[in-house]
Length: 174
Image: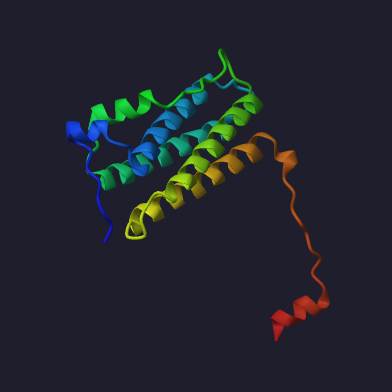
């Protein structure tokens, strides 16, 4: 059975953070940066990117609720203590060009996804729900990085187009 973690006592604030708590703090940080990037993005026909970042923010709120449910309401003090230990790389000052924003956030997505994957090793085999949630978050962050990259620079897409031969067509007809 999945062990639920509770982070409400003062003794727990001083203890080692759980992988779920660390991931929650990372996602809160990432959502703040994505929100800031959304409003600092130079407008150059980038409605699609605005919608995409808005969708990412909705996903972060969903993951936040899922993690918080597993943690049984982590205390504010606990999250503040954890956030103080995480070095926050700030967005560049001023307005952001879409390619600069995509490069910065893409790097943050990859960094948080790698951290989440590393935390999976610290979870026990009996914590299947937590493992599934962290795995889904890591895959989701990878997907967000690809989506943002391709929406900003669609020329980088590489598709392998295979011609449909008669033999391949006939194999599906039989």
